[in-house]
Length: 110
Image (cartoon, rainbow, N blue to C red; front, side):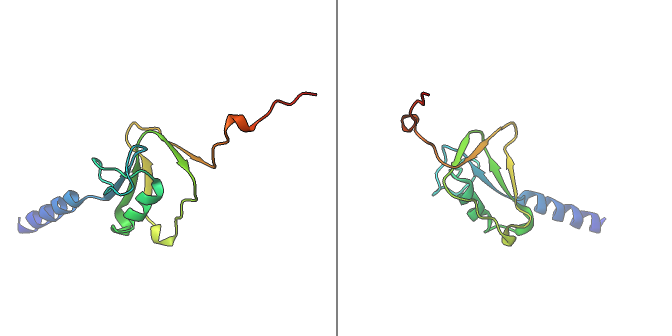
């Protein structure tokens, strides 16, 4: 009976700690803490914040929206175990490169 109680308490403690989840939203702020109520704006910042957590239980949760990348996302061996996934029901779009204004183009006639 004592071992069951100890195991149950240990399991409840582990579950209450949960994984280190960092949330991202296009309307977030990279000075935020990355919580669900105060998400960061960029995936790169979320990865930086996730490195402060336990390597085996880190997750970056990406909310709905469009994420324009202006630089590479740097992931290395220190990020083993990191999971980057969409928030439940979300369909985020991650786009690399840069926008070229329509005015840059001219019509071609032959």
